[in-house]
Image (tube, rainbow, N blue to C red; front, side):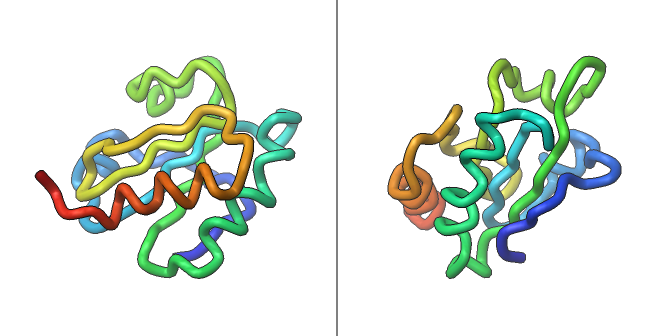
Length: 111
């Protein structure tokens, strides 16, 4: 699943995230956040040729448990997951290469 432009209508449960198989990028933010809006072309560019990476876009805010369970403080926060486990995190990425580098960590063998 390539880049997703819109936030999910309903965020997944933490248990669902923890039980994911394969690689995924969990993006926390809001549609009105300026930092999030500026990061979208960077995220889209980094994910455009990565059909192997699921992009899960979650709207975060007060009372949103999933963001709290990942200790999200600033938006956008990208959590890079391999088989439901966090392997890398970027907060307010500034460049597409920074995201591409984090995606490379997902491709690295465990160990």
